[in-house]
Length: 167
Image 1 (tube, rainbow, N blue to C red):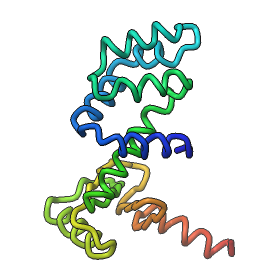
Image 2 (image 1 turned 45 degrees about the vertical axis):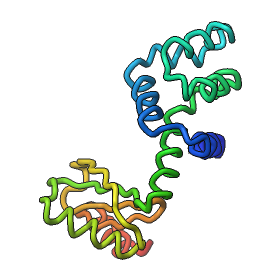
Image 3 (image 1 turned 180 degrees about the horizontal axis):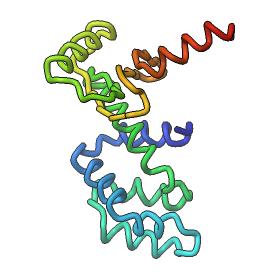
């Protein structure tokens, strides 16, 4: 994620646009890729891009989107929404984490993982993204920001290989 996307995400958060509006806008741009292409295209004129924004998006977010389109930054939209989401979670005391697994964990295991993360990071709640990754062979990888805890079989094999080869 670029610094520009993070900055735009912070500005979007500070505008205090309702969460539903921002989420609806992100959904529109994800589900209609041609719309995003038109808003990113240098071939489409500035006035045409502004008319598209006025017709498609909720009123509360139109000015923000026009600024993105005018500065040729619409291609950052997905990262901007991720940065906005991170700001929302930070304000609410919610930790964002990802769990990569081979076999989907049971509800009890998920509750324990969330409880451990809340305690470790001093947060109220955890928003855990579950991602199946069969290349792990077994076990799991837990990622929180830049910190990755690798308890996968693939990771253990890699560690053993490094010990054996002396790397």
